[in-house]
Each structure stands twice: as C-alpha cells, then as structure tokens.
Length: 71
Image (cartoon, rainbow, N blue to C red; front, side, top):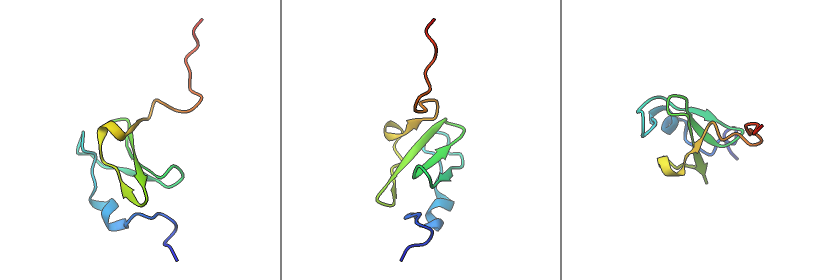
C-alpha cells in the first residue's frame, strides 16, 4: 500500500536542496522532516509534500526539552 511509509517520492528527495544554502538535505523519517545540516533547519513534510519555506522550518537547536540553565 505504501513504500516504507515515507509518503515522499524518492526521486523528489534526490533533487531537493535547501532553499537557503542550496546544500543537500537528509530525510528524517521519524520526524517527517528534511534536514539541512548547513542551515541548521528542518523542513516539515505535510501530507507527503515537503514545505520548503525557511519561515516554516524548525531550527535544529530548538530541540524539545533543551533549555539552558539560568543560574
């Protein structure tokens, strides 16, 4: 019924690049995101469609539970 549950065409993933750096993207199946290591951003994939907008991307530093101690 689906191919590994990616919901994203593998050929599409091969040609997509980060809109900010034009660098390569890594697919994170667990979070359904495309990761740009250079930009430090994670672009969401919604309903099998990569949302390649910088303003929609999550900063990689914004990990859940990652808070700096304010001592």
